[in-house]
Amino acid sequence: MMNSAICLLEQAAARCGGRVAVEEENASVTYGELRSMARAVGSGLLAGGAQPRTPVVVYLPKSIHALAAFFGAQCAGSPYAPVDSHIPMARLQKIVDNLRPGYVVTNGELLTNLEELSLDGTRVLLIEELLAGQENGEAVDAAISQVVDTDPIYIMYTSGSTGTPKGVTIPHRGILDYAAWVADTFAFDESTVMASQAPFYFDNSTFDIYGTLRCGGTLLLVPDSLYLFPSKLPEYLEEHKVTSIFWVPTVMINVANSGALEGRGLPKLKNVAFCGEVMPNKQLNIWRRALPHCTYANLYGPTEITDVCCYYKVERPFEDHESLPIGKACENMRVLILTEDGRPAAPGETGELCVMGSGVALGYWNAPEITAKAFVPNPLSPSFPERMYRTGDLAQWGEDGLIRFLGRKDFQIKLKGNRIELGEVENAAMCVAGVENACAVFDAPRERIVLFVESQAAITLRKMRLALKEYIPQYMMPGELVVMDKLPHTANDKIDRVALKATLTEEDA
Ligand code: AMP
Image 1 (cartoon, protein in one colour):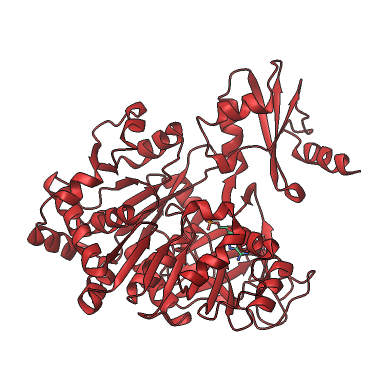
Image 2: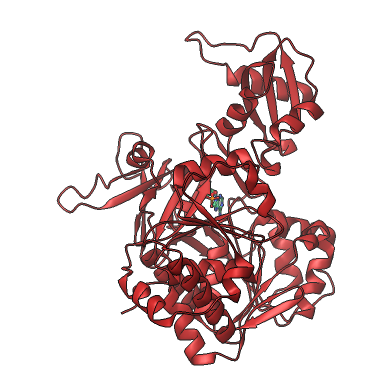
């Protein structure tokens, strides 16, 4: 019985230890080598006194070393928490305060950034030193054997509306079932070459890592710089004989718009899957026309349910105005659309998409209140307790039995595939000197966040962005700043977001 996702690597290494598991720009490792690296890291963590279930922060760029740290934490029976190597230190401090990790694993280059952190009892270890250490096979095997499938495998931080990121805690079972679903649905095997786009601190990367490595395929870490030149990506796919991609729609759109798909047959490419935001039909049709031999799949899911819970394999061309379905529930997952009064929605009726199944997270790390709000008992199953995640997404069943995504109930947005709570931007703005009040509004047509602040100071967009750099990542930065003497308020004294949003459409008039 497989109890832990490390078994996926162990089994693949036993079957095909000499095959290339991961390739990055200037290096590659076989399955056997990746297994040895993970066990060396695990041994180092255990020798330092790693306690089971005590998280390990992995503060490294997307790399083979980061993967060795993820699997290394698992070898020590510990969950890992991947964080962006460009994360502002104030945000990392919030994560560390929430997580109380046993270790931060980093490299020599990033080490000095950590000097700003208060790490109260958390030890910092260098990946280079862990990899140079001796493997203690007995200790690692003993730690792995203690893991049960309901233990956490990773904690992934997403934007939080109160300004503190939320640590979504996923169990091993979620990943084991998800990897099996990926392999079956997309027919992954040893010939699979997966070009991985998602950053490792974004849940789409679990499709790439666990789906590919479960099957003995090769995981290609696409150099970040290539995303700045989308017209180069098809050439890269051709050169590397890529068979599968799972990319965020923003990247797919950029590639389609670059015109670089035309005339490039990409005969090896079989699976084109995407997830994370709405995929526009216009660009999807460009891909389908250029590469008609590929299978296209719209995957849907929030971080809280192990990446994906619904999918739709595109069977026909869609007109620009049509809504591309997100389909039906994946294996091991179930979905409900609940109306505001708690009834299952009839076809065509709008409700909140709710998810049950083995992928549902254990909750938010060290945050019982927000966990209790989002992870609730399924109200339609009173006699059999079942946990359900309320996504906050609005959806409808179509007459064709397929689900359509309609948007959000709250102030969470997606900007170039990144999940952002506008509240996190507002909280950061409130930390800037001279700001008395702040309201962030999403200007969807121009794909930017507009930040309205109440202030008597002469703040410019440039100064604001410089100040915000300390608190929020680049992808959350406002694209426009409006300074006001007083923000408008509604009759019950809340900031009048509707009035502020209306000023954006006035600009168009
Ligand atoms: P994340 O937790 O970053 O994966 O973001 C999850 C959110 O992204 C969901 O709750 C949706 O709002 C949105 N999302 C994910 N997949 C899709 C999709 N295929 N179509 C439209 N929105 C999506």
